[in-house]
Image (tube, rainbow, N blue to C red):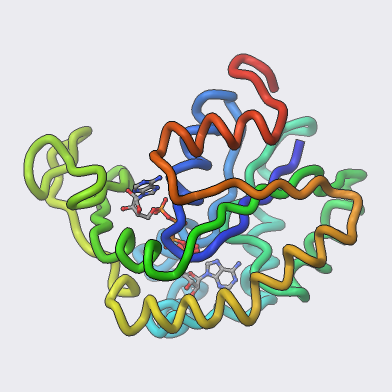
Length: 220
Ligand code: AP5
């Protein structure tokens, strides 16, 4: 099964994708996380990507497509994968389709997490992340047990540079212009497209997501 999570920045794609993958034993390809890992490791790809990410612009398609192809190749055949943050525009969607077709695979389901811009700006402004394990918190909505410290390893949490309000607004513009049209693209494809209200509590969204995808914990 290949599932694409679509939705604006901060709607909860990462939060929901992680819960789903952990519960079902699925893999995830999270292009934002892959890029941040490359940037932190100061690889040539990370250095090329950094400027785009800081400004809230999309990283050039060839870099992204090569990165996703490489990651996908690490999974054994038959692996179920959640794609979070990819594809992000029509050319990535076309390249993705071809990439899967050459492997005899398809995009099966699209889950669109819906929420209005004001809500996602509020969520993003409170987001704090752990630099050690990548756990994500929210200062007001999902705070850690100890203020400013990761529950899992105690590391000091940080705010992503692209979570500054001005950059968030630009990321939203890019989302509406480049990524949102993919909903219509996939509605015209063989993939099943599901809309899930992302403005509910984390557990409620997760339940709705599982119901929409028709998956049960323990299945693969
Ligand atoms: P990326 O990391 O993909 O950012 P994004 O799509 O903007 O998504 P976010 O990670 O900001 O949000 P999310 O929806 O995962 O929300 P989360 O679960 O964290 O991309 C970053 C950059 O990388 C891009 O701008 C671009 O430069 C580059 N890039 C990445 N992919 C690319 C591609 N394919 N092509 C080109 N460039 C690419 O939740 C947010 C907050 O809300 C958290 O604090 C969380 O705790 C809280 N929260 C979540 N759900 C709930 C809930 N239900 N109730 C209350 N709080 C909640």
